[in-house]
Amino acid sequence: MRVLVVEDEERTAALLRRGLVEEGYAVDVARNGVDAVWSATEVDYDAIVLDLMLPGVDGFEVCRRLRARGRWAPVLMLTARVDVTDRIRGLDAGADDYLPKPFSFGELTARLRALVRRGGVRRPVVLRAGPVELDPAAHRVRRAGEPVELSAKEFALLHLLLRHPDEVLTRTFVTDHVWDDAFDATSNIVDQYVRYLRRKIDTPGEESLIETVRGVGYRLRVPDGPGLPGASGLAGSPGTSGAPGVTTGGGG
Image (tube, rainbow, N blue to C red; front, side, top):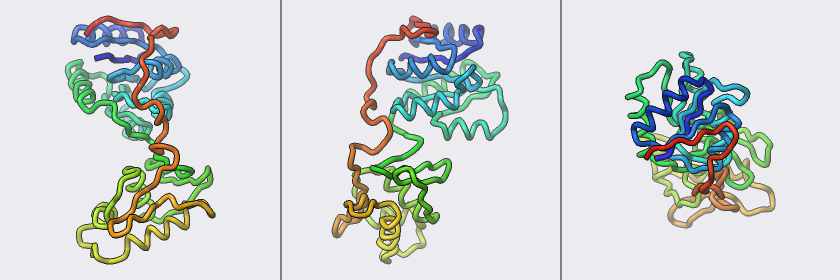
């Protein structure tokens, strides 16, 4: 397993590297956010241990840039801050887990093992299909860069469709996930809200992004591939860790 440790404090970085190497990991160390983004873009890491407080480009921005580039290695964010709003910001930026300083090294390695088991699956911060993008954290939708005002149910329906691109979703499935168990699944509420959405997100004169699958339900068409940022780089590309400021370690 290959791990990138992003930590500007020299002693902490050295301790983390030594401990992880002893656990059998191959470890690279980056001392700032710019080097971290470069290295994690070039190398297909199994996990990233990312300090929040970095000079220049902080951990929030590192996470955002990596996710925007389609780099999905699990990120464990470290911070000395105790404010819950910082934890929320980190998770919304694309981090997978949070560990406050000071921490137990045993807990850190346990959390890393759990993250590695999940793998580097695609989990974009912002969901996209064609000209439409949805930011769940900011509760914002844009079409071709322009804001789109949606009701709470319209937003939930679009979010569900974007999470299942090119999949046929039955009306019952949509009802179960957007409304509640008490709602009458035989009503035409799903069809009504699909019509509302089409009026707001479709480009006039072009085919609708939401395709009707007759007798079954609806499918969100993705005109240019999977509709998620960084799709071309999902598999990761082998690289070298010879970036300035990135130290390559042994192990595993």
